[in-house]
Amino acid sequence: MKTEPNFDELRELLDGDVLCDELSRAMYSSGACLYRVRPLAIARPRHKLDVIKVIEYAAQRCIPITAR
Image 1 (tube, rainbow, N blue to C red):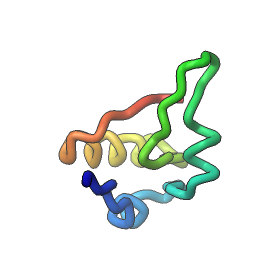
Image 2 (spheres, rainbow, N blue to C red; image 1 turned 90 degrees about the vertical axis):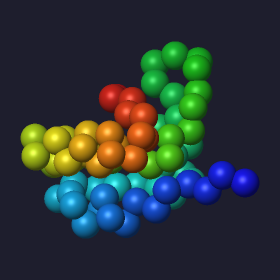
Image 3 (cartoon, rainbow, N blue to C red; image 1 turned 120 degrees about the horizontal axis):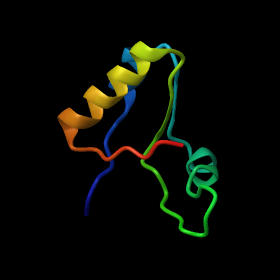
Image 4 (cartoon, one colour; image 1 turned 60 degrees about the vertical axis):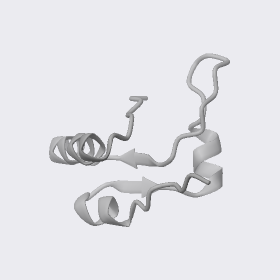
């Protein structure tokens, strides 16, 4: 069974929010189309440095990013 990553470390790195609850993941599972993929987490950066940290964190762990 594949386990999902723990995003506590990312929460510590960012000034913005990291959401992992089921409701948030369901709300962010689709954009402006019918295609749905439930994200592992939602990062809501507050500034440019947060965006850079999210990209570095994801790249180091081979976690895909979808911008919304």
